[in-house]
Image (cartoon, rainbow, N blue to C red; front, side):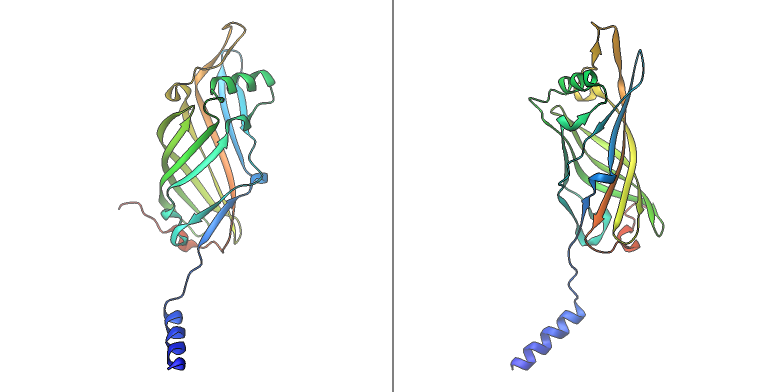
Length: 206
């Protein structure tokens, strides 16, 4: 009887292999998030100082299109500028004492098309800044960099007023910044398991 049970278990495992749950983790050293804007004097730029310790993001069914309900958060104080005055004014405009985090809650990823090592997609999610949330459609260009590395890059145009943020000013209003900003990102991830083309099956309606 014992031999029969062991044999049955072996046959079950052979016919129903258990797939280990795959996950990816951000590589801060080679990733970047940059924000660009303009003023009546000159263009300006800020960047995000990414955390050295980042969480694992589970990939359900080892398929990228099944990614959802993921929260990506950064501390507002990690938004930096080479100009200290600009940094202080930006932090004040973001109301960081009341709303210390900027977050993106991923609801769905749609794969538009893919090849062996790259793909195009867009992420639907909720972006929250200064306590105000807006649904956004984030374009993604993805590339597999070797067997276990993944790069996601793209950009999105936003308006500060959509998040109830007053565009910073200086010198009693003599310098004013435009409402529109552009966010560029390039994020590198390391995967627990080998990345394959099977992860990229499209979920775009025909």
